[in-house]
Image 1 (cartoon, rainbow, N blue to C red):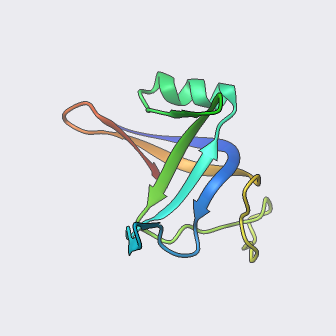
Image 2: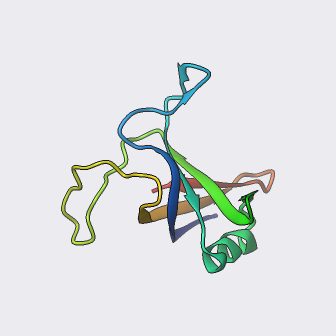
Image 3: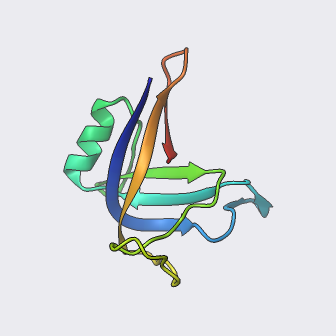
Length: 107
């Protein structure tokens, strides 16, 4: 089962121009961690998506192995850096594995 949604929130951490790193090694993925408003967090949780809590705010890390296009509201390419605190909207796809686990991908 694949479902598409728009997740929106405030950037907590991002690695959208180069692959994320863990302990000095590339993960091979582009990542974006969002602090989510309550309504978005509730919608994702109702779909079985696990969130983490950071200082009372729900957060979710989204990832993709493919380059993620970064666009302005009008659809033109954004050339700057996406900084902490930026408000963003991203298309995500929820996938369920045969074991009923839920995964979220940037689509």
